[in-house]
Image (tube, rainbow, N blue to C red):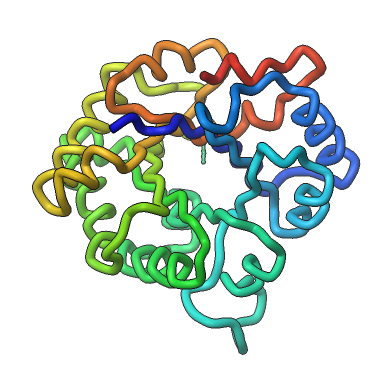
Length: 249
Ligand SMILES: O=C(COP(=O)(O)O)NO
């Protein structure tokens, strides 16, 4: 079954009202393939979600960068999945390595977050990825399989989940994974789904790559058979009038 290509832009903790409006106006003029060919999602910080949603063209969707692990309440500083539903935000990024490493989000905690967001009708970009130390010790596949298993243990349906493989050593470093490195891990993850979930999910789940993707390296990465798209950080903020989204496809 053909998997629809997916391009996400993770703006992380960046932007001002003016900068966000500028990016959105450029995206509104950007050349992007039709929605039935490519799914495009941008993820601004929480404080800009409503602004972006109100200004952005309808064929680009909006994602939050996180949400709380259960129904809202006395959890100061958190944003609940119910609030995202209320804002009409259809996607959320969960398990980003910057939250796993900086905020000590465990595999199980991420699995619980994915399950709760899905239960509220929010679609999830679930992130996995190894550190440089883990790669150098040869435990890449073991690490990303454990991160994926912690999600699979908590959900029974992958239809609304996109898995993002983002090697920590490639995030923000300019050291993009080679196409072969990315393909190897994506293929191992697809094999993991085949063995541990189902052949159907293995064939249909989109596994996207993130980590120093840009217009210059995306085409070769996109040509890899088990790579279904990107989760772009820094480069998703560097849009300008000559921006051609197609360069990411
Ligand atoms: O964290 C990332 C990737 O960031 P960069 O593209 O800046 O490496 N995506 O979620």
